[in-house]
Image 1 (cartoon, rainbow, N blue to C red):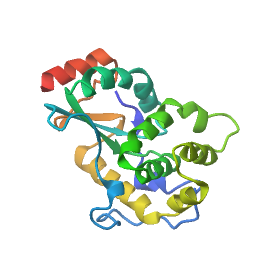
Image 2: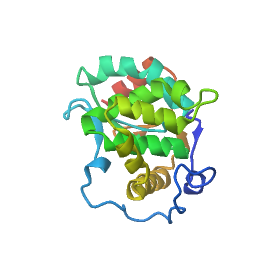
Image 3: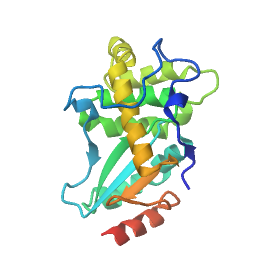
Image 4: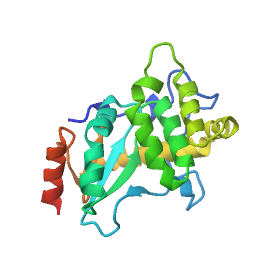
Length: 210
């Protein structure tokens, strides 16, 4: 069962702040202009695939990292690249560091979102949880490798409209879909709670949804 526990809005805005910002207001309509490309869909795979797989994940969730390292590469090779599924990523940050990481990922061109996200998940122990490191500083280094310089990173960090848009969408998804933890999956808009255990379980669920 997914076990990155659901981070409510109060959790995201508590504890040491990444930047000096006021607490976010209650959930409301997106704070960004309609059509802002940063909040557009982030997807892989053939548009005509019979199965749409959707994943809600947090970049500081260890279970999400395990899935990204141990299971997702085979999913990409056997199911995405072969046209069997279309895969959509949904940001569901469980803490402030994950929220900032999601903001950075969404500020990249759409085609660079997934490689950056996978890099953060696969190397999560190095930038998020290593001893005696500042995860924001480490995130800034990885953003630089992806093409986001120091000044742009600081601008993203200070973008409360983007921060609020991600949290508002998370609030709506969490409430409507009753998401209790990450990673959370839906196959053709039906919950798929048991697909994180192995690639075989994932592939079987895809076959059932086809």
